[in-house]
Image (cartoon, rainbow, N blue to C red; front, side, top):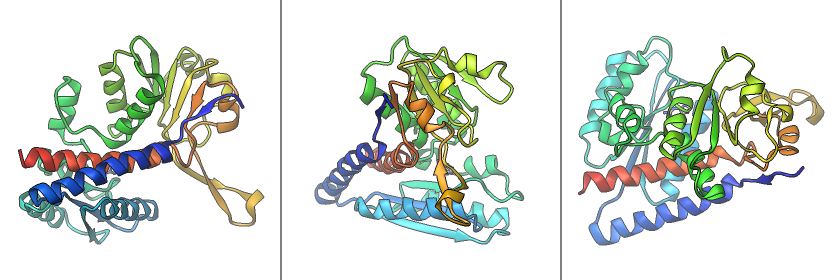
Length: 291
Ligand code: GUN
């Protein structure tokens, strides 16, 4: 293995420390406690884990963390009423509705019901438009965390060829906007892209966000490229014993690390940075709300 491992867990710890310091000053000097509300509809096991760790991290940073759980069959009106209450609650500065939502709920309608100023996910159409036009916005947490790691590793990203694999609204599209904002030449690749390995081989920066375990292999990677693996996939691990599983990314770590210049591990790469950025976005929303 030749690649530098980009330690997202350690980087996230420094971001979270800074956030905690900022929160302490807001409390002491202004008597304000930033507050984040996380809403979970249903009982998807992975979403439950994410929501629990987001709430725990919020409290550890000294913020107010409130968790709302609705039944899987909760009517849309009930969710919209809760969002409206949170929109007008002065103690709440950030609102996150965990996705995906159960099929009977209209995700776009729900996201766009959140006050854009409290939309710490950066998914509201106003924030999407602001980001796309290079204006001050709430920036989606996962792509923001990826960008911070890339800037930390490279300094300037100007002129680099970046390939983002995946075109989701949560990661792929905003990631591409952020890389463009840092003057990369950006390609968004996806399941219909012709000769994907060849496209990826042109990249100085690869961001893999497709949700397919270990799809990207070392022979796709240009020697020395930086690989950011956004995937979190649970796969069977019979070598660990019957019924055991393990987490892997969208990149085959060993073969990619043998060729890349730098790579994020799974777990311990992008995941911790996503949570750190959520906390940072909540503090930003709180500061903007209080002038
Ligand atoms: N589901 C997977 N990632 C995310 C995220 O970043 N925010 C929300 N709200 N839901 C998600």
